[in-house]
Image (cartoon, rainbow, N blue to C red; front, side, top):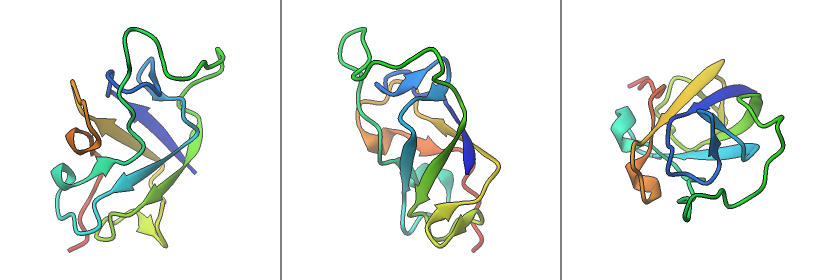
Length: 107
């Protein structure tokens, strides 16, 4: 499993630069660069509260990352094998405005 750091402050699952969802999906089946990937699990935060309530243990613990970015070096059978990834998307309102900054094309 992979450690996930997330700087998408507009996502309801983001807390203290970590993802509290438990698992995510990285989209971008035909991506050749990180800007062509996205976090398919992104959910825009409504107001100042998170969509779900999380415990104090929410952090960057290793989580399951399903990866649909087939050209990524870290994609093995649609699972991310990177030790850690960074998801970015300052001010994102939709999934397509996020990206996996760790994506590395094997093409």
